Image (cartoon, rainbow, N blue to C red; front, side):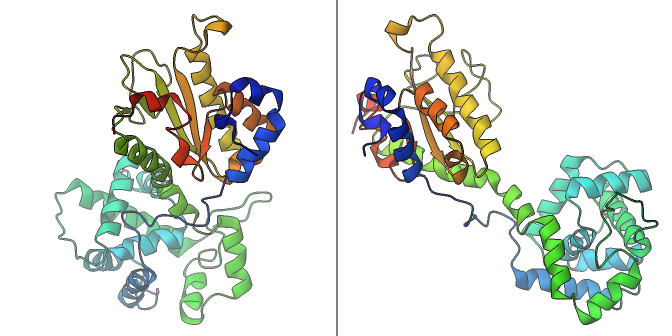
Amino acid sequence: MMFPFEVPFEEVQSDLESYIDATFDSLESTFLAMPRGEGFIEYSVFEEGYEALKRATHSFQDMVPETVIAAVYSTPISFIILRTILGFTPPEWAYIASERTGVEIPQSAARAIDKRLRKNPLEPLSPSNDSITDTRIRAMVQAACDLIRKGVQEDVPDILHRLDKADTKCGLNSLQPLADLGVPYPMLLYERFLGRPFAAHRDSVSELVGDALENAIEGILSRAGISFRKTKHTERVPGFDQVPDFIIPDEFNPQVVIEAKIAEDDGTARDKVTRVQHLGELSMQGRRADQGPRYEVIACIAGRGFKIRREDMKKLILSTRGKVFTMNNLDHLIEFTKLKEYKSR
């Protein structure tokens, strides 16, 4: 079976279901493999931070801010261990710390601190009492120590407390035995079930996953000597209330636009199909149906999310007039689109 971009659009319309099947067959998931990204922590480094914090606190018996802060400044990855014990994201930790200490810690600052320490996890920090960053780190550590020491204060029916975990529910009485004896495997599995394995890392590298597809497209265009404008995520471009990922040759004379989208679930895929549909509608503004679009809309997609709903794939194929490509057939991108008119080598 041929792909929808290989045949005239009229033929696609006459046998749409078959072309949906062909596109489905060429889609592959990307969720099994993730880029490590900047700031990825190897287990050996993570364990070194854990052992440093354990030694400094005498096997988590001395969980007072001064002791933990000293460990964080000598072995910065200990800060990440502390956050992992809490089970919080950097913004969540910052919010709790601001509430408890009165120190203002914006979400962006919390993320920046977390990223900085992950990039240099074993390089000792130089403390400075006058630094706003030091003040924020100390406030976050203070709040963490308080939460870990106290654990869950009371059980409320139908409410799951974020600290109702094997290592934090009963304060230090929960943490110390686990540090000494380890966690029963069923409990480890249960908490993994509640939290999803690798979820935080997957979220942190989501843009890198998308970049893999965009980089492949950029490479194809560059090797062919095609002029193009690659837009930025928050950029505003005149003539587009929704900015596509690539505009060929440029935004002043758009002839081809490309949307590069990856989706691993059907909800995300539906949102991204809607974006492509809107670009298709923009291309027909002020045009009669017999005139065709002002510019060609191309969708380059990856991920299992696009394979779940046939209706979404139908909308995608129709809104691009058959110009839907996957990672498996991206090498045909120029041959079967208007891009070939702009090829210079």
